[in-house]
Length: 584
Image (cartoon, rainbow, N blue to C red):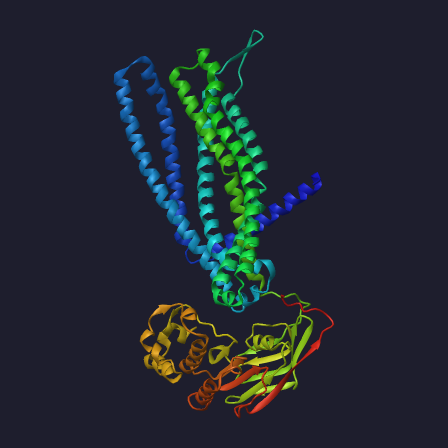
């Protein structure tokens, strides 16, 4: 890469980080827990400042203590031990307080960020649109759970380390500068002084280590981000294989599944090897820097001590101050890898948040369906739904479904039935024409496979409302009516019902949910067309009796009417000249 390319790449990276930091700040500042977090941060700042004062006092203690040791002054020696004990006890309590505040700040920050991500993710339509948004929509669960945890913990740890190291640096640089005034050097028969000699030695020593560490550690930013993405894909593959274990076994696909997972794992291992190589080179710098720092202050201060300008106690004060400055400056060296890791997680988490916020914005050139909600009718006016290279429409330009009507929409496989279903749900806005939709609270949408959330059966039946919204007896009646009476004793048991119940039982549970909610409108995406005869009779009897005033719009590839539907519509798909702007 040329110098110009390197410069522009670095500038773009810096601009991207600044934008991600602004997004991070927005997530925290808009959280209900921001005031609690602010109090914890203020408490941390106070404790760290008090600890720095204690360390300054401890460094000043070196001079009288080591002078007492050199002079064999027992009384002064014992007196300084008492002073040390007092200072040490105070510092111990401050360290305990800092640890407590550190842990609670991490908890509070994670609470703010994770709750904000959940709010953004599950805003209307966003979760659905994110699934088709490309790489940023891959494994959002990993970004919200693991990456957000890592980001918030690193943020607190690095912020505390940065603040503490910077405070120590400025505090002890002054001490080191004052102690350097006694250093007199002789060269060619002449004496001269270098103002702040020990400070310059410390800065040069640290700057050389920091610059080298940063150059070696910088590739870790992209490598860690890529690794987290690969880890998420591998974890998703494992979960998918576990979920489909019966299908894999029935197909005899174990060997192929193993090979697929091993290929994904090879990608993870490859990145881990590259990270290990970079981390090893980085450790060579940080370890060498640390070991040489043990003797560096003594060597630098030796001319002053052997020249008689420093007492033994003053030498120890100089060494202590130098070590504190080195410890502060070394933070930037030792944490090069953690900073790279932090930037990688910041990128993954904030890219997700930025993508979610952008879901509500559409380019002016994109054709969008005009959607009016809260109408007393379900009406389609010149509606065309854009799907990739196809335009999907009903054979009638103006369709109005009134309360209590039963309408069947028939479409051949591949005509975009599911996209029409999503458009009627207000999830798919790409297309032309106008949709007038009844209130969401009065409508239930039945996808091809029913969604069974985790929780108690009572919560499943009342989803997305709270169980307290409905009468207690409604749940038992609904289960009884849909041949699920054996589940009545388990209404309050929390379980993975999508695993415990058969596909037929899950379908019956969806019918029971209709009875509990009593919607005015039901829109189905082939959920009613593949029922066996007994289930179909049961469902139609529910619509004839308990839900007789409910309007039904059933989208299906099956043209069987069963004497239930009062109107038949047909779905057509025509090729489009331009590709759809909708996410693929």
